[in-house]
Length: 185
Image 1 (cartoon, rainbow, N blue to C red):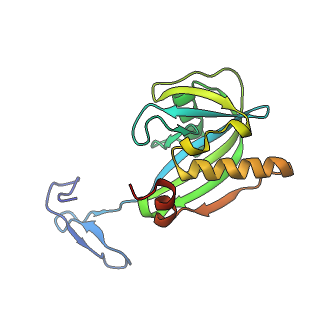
Image 2 (cartoon, rainbow, N blue to C red):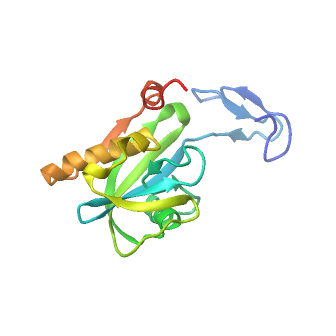
């Protein structure tokens, strides 16, 4: 950031009084520009013993499979964001049961919040999906999953399903975890 979005003057990157980390500060109008992590909200939609996945039609990771999820918008709750993203990507109505995985990715300033859900009807590819499909556990395209957050959520789900209990899973994915997942390319 070079200029203040409030007054247009040049900003400096410094630690404001009473703070503990550098921020973009405008000495002209006094605005401190906070930059905060983005929330990615989505669902793990289930129909019987199958999970709904979407093949991405957009970058990043176009052509890879994912759960329906995306960035939360202003003026919506996380549950509303998860339901909206599921509709946008999979044209699927769902019944949400609760937060299932909360995964921090501090190195890319994201927090994933995936809710368990049941499909409440049909589904179809939305504009951000090449296709959508239901998968049994043995059919999951593990080598074609778009992100480590999706793999982690699915592995928790199948482990928990065997135990018939679905607790909240909170974890972190580090830069090193992502590098192991994506390789050095």
